Length: 125
Image 1 (cartoon, helix red, strand yellow):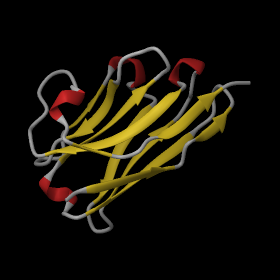
Image 2 (cartoon, one colour; image 1 turned 90 degrees about the vertical axis):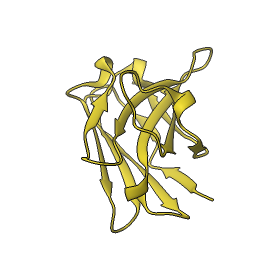
Image 3 (tube, one colour; image 1 turned 120 degrees about the vertical axis):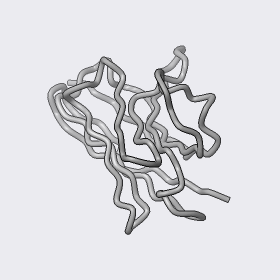
Image 4 (cartoon, helix red, strand yellow; image 1 turned 180 degrees about the horizontal axis):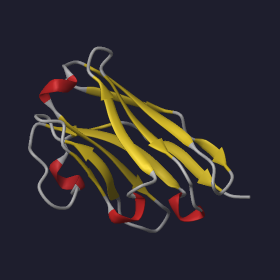
């Protein structure tokens, strides 16, 4: 069974940066499309970014394009989300997730079957 554990969240000032990590165990990252999601209080879970399991094609939600970068280290079985120029509206609990499916169009959380426990990111002065 695939297990995912996030880390790297915290409190950061607007304009600051954080790097989230997600350690994956139980199977190789190469077999999965991986993604990052976030959920703010009172809001639905939102797909932020994803890497397709083949070809390494990346996708981003418009609100983070140019600021966030998703990556993976398949040798270490770790995925990352580098977040720059953070804004207060980026405040949320961030989750990593994995699926054997290909992600086409919107990064839909219903497509993903394995999830981490989440890490809190707070952007505030």
